[in-house]
Structure formats: C-alpha cells, structure tokens
Image 1: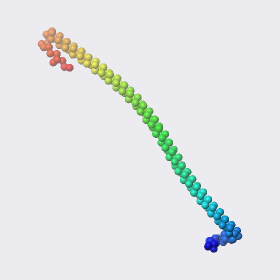
Image 2: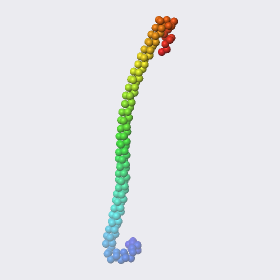
Image 3: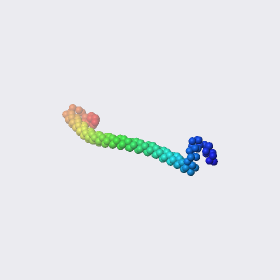
Image 4: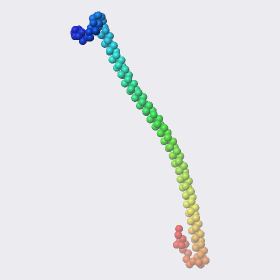
Length: 147
C-alpha cells in the first residue's frame, strides 16, 4: 500500500519523506490533517457566524421596520384622536345651536299663535260690532273667519 502512495507523490516529496523518516512523515500527515480539519471547522464556524449575522441583520431590520410602523401608527392614532375631539366639539356646538334654534322656533310659534288668536278675537269683535250696528244681517263668525 505504501508503494501505491509513493507512486502518487512528486519526486521532490518522495525524496523529502525518505530523508525525514517514516515516523516524521506520519506526524507531518497528521499535523496537515489536523490543520485542514481545523480550517474546515473555522470555515464552518465562519459560515455559521455569517448566517447568524445575516439572520440577525434581517431580524434587526424587521424590528426597525416594526418600530417605525408602530411610531407611524401611533402618530396616526394621535391625529385621529385629535380629529375626533375636534369633531366632537363641533358636534356639541351644533347640538347647542340646534337646541337654541328649536327654542327660538317654539317661541316664534307661540308668538304666531298669540297673534293669530288676537286677530281672530279682533275679527270676531269687528263682526259682532258690525252685526250690532246693523251693518250685516247675520252673526256667523265661524263661517266668516277662516283659521
């Protein structure tokens, strides 16, 4: 088997291995294997670190985006609450105006009814006076006065 390996070596390597001896060649091979294994472990560790870094970076970006969204939503909510308060104040003012208008309308309607009643009373009085003076021949105020 050693002969097969010897055939795969470059002539310079074969001469060097012959000079240093078999035990040192084995030691050199183990050291090389260990170094290559360590290199693979370092590469795997680096790759794992890079993946974790990228994942952390993406998570940090997502967290940042979420915080920005929360901040924007908070601002929108505050503005909506301010608008709601402003509209509520306007609504209360309009309700007060409507209430005042209703009261004014009721007062005007009462005054109008009093004026109508006074006009009816005056008209009845005039009709009665005309009847008593003989200016008319009948006393039918309900037919002559339209309400």
